[in-house]
View (spheres, helix red, strand yellow):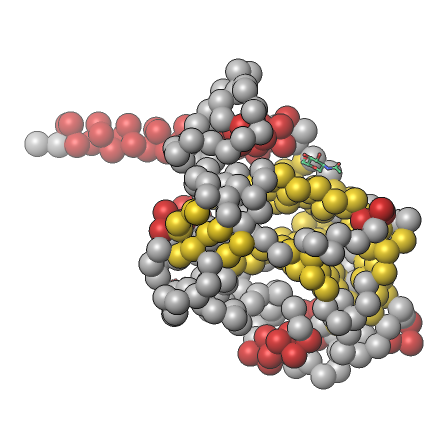
Length: 348
Ligand SMILES: *[C@@H]1O[C@H](CO)[C@@H](O)[C@H](O)[C@H]1NC(C)=O
Ligand SMILES: *[C@@H]1O[C@H](CO)[C@@H](O)[C@H](O)[C@H]1NC(C)=O
């Protein structure tokens, strides 16, 4: 993201506590039916270890220098106006993203990992440099920022001095935020205003740092970021060790078929939509097999397809709790449906 756009974003997001929520898109397909299509990640996975250097064929960088050391990519802020950020050249359409990083220190300094679509769907991780023991998880649908009620701050240990593995698992049914293999938050489709606010369009990845506490920002931003940034305490550096991505719908490109922003309206060229609908919650735990590594064949759901196996693998390395609670809520829904059916039966 260019600093100019960032300040526009900040200027537009006055007052309420804000996240990295985008209020700007170069071409918003919900407003303009002539937007260019999005380049897709053509393979089903991508991994890069930044300890071995940059990957400039995948990531574009903002003008601020990002340096590469044996610890990883360094996103450093040493003076006002800097916002070193990398942005992926491709988009994914459902899948998972894991980053291994150490957040930047410094009051008012924000480290962020953002999945973002052209119509302003967003899934975020954000770390505040003044709060070493928590991470913010957040999401937005279709740029809806009318209420900032979606952020959940998750307690954890030592975000600044220890590398942690932060994963987002994204299907058409739910989003999970996972830290070091433990599911820490689940957002179900229905819980996001019956899907209206659910992130569901092809997203690219933006990773960087910025100074929410810069005195040029409005009071709301500075307050959200944890206070004024004192640059004399810097430089402030986030270290990104690695990024690994799974794309459930590897393809050439994605385009919006209409202006609904619904995932079923997305046209996939040179591939198929694999939304992993139902997710691994309904996938057989044992026999999901045959991962050929090739893309699926035309269906949107499928146990046994490689993307189910992939989700199951993430699941296997994650805590069991949330699966149980999802199963519980499914069971609850079944009971409610049964009760409703009985009421219908017995009513005259
Ligand atoms: C925006 O989100 C809020 C909930 O945060 C919801 O009440 C409202 O209906 C949404 N607006 C639109 C246009 O979807
Ligand atoms: C990060 O966590 C995910 C989910 O548990 C896991 O699949 C992945 O292998 C982990 N990555 C690293 C580098 O440990």
